[in-house]
Length: 378
Image (cartoon, rainbow, N blue to C red):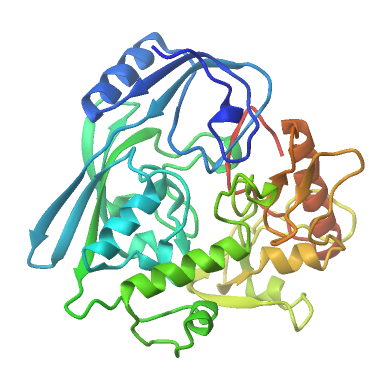
């Protein structure tokens, strides 16, 4: 058992109190044994990997925090490609570096994302035209309800935009309460050292290539890290803008009808799926969510909006902070809420609520937080 450490020292946002008890798991068997014992006693628990997507209260935290520090990358050659079986405690960016160094394409545009491998499928991480779901074969997990280890295919994880059946949405319970033990990724062995076709305009511009061009893996990785660093999304002890949970809000997905109410210059990206309902707040002062009709006779295509654009056009600028608060919007990126030094969890929560209220008032859309919330309500 480890001496309990404040989560402020273990998370990139730099806030969070100490749990009653803290355990460290260095291999999957140890992790399973620790969790099994905790679950038998029915006490509060949580697992913590890299701490890059966690927003916790500064108050003492009930129960036990299990630090996942398992390691290992196994390479399996198959007819379909190269499978990497990766332990949950591996650092995500170290895995990307391994793949790039070994000529494996598929996750090079996901360079620089902080956190652990085990968190990647929960969040279905994505950036610069690549998403984990495109290469994820499946995971091994420990199921809380059954107490059993199981291999689960990616198709059973309900992967969507920054979500899965394993995610605690807004701090509420996940649809399937389980802990990821390892992840299987199917990558493409590159015969010429180049990655997958560049699928994101900003990345193509940074590389000075056209969309669809294939570029050397290492060059893509360097360009992505440079882009992330310019937005304060690579942790740097000398730069307080990097003390954040990354993008604090997800890009909202609404129906085409809702998207048409926005100004013409509002960025929007039509999605492949067809939606039956949208979660939109009316602009008449009501705080109630519009309920879907009992029977939906027509369907509408979903449209993804830019949360950053919505924030910036709600009179909230880069570097904005509430009076007397040490929490602020990043000076580099309006989606990041940052700890500018000795910020409290209440400071960050108040800023998040203010941003939500301004966007809701201006556009009738409620921004949803991306981090896992621990004893915090937004």
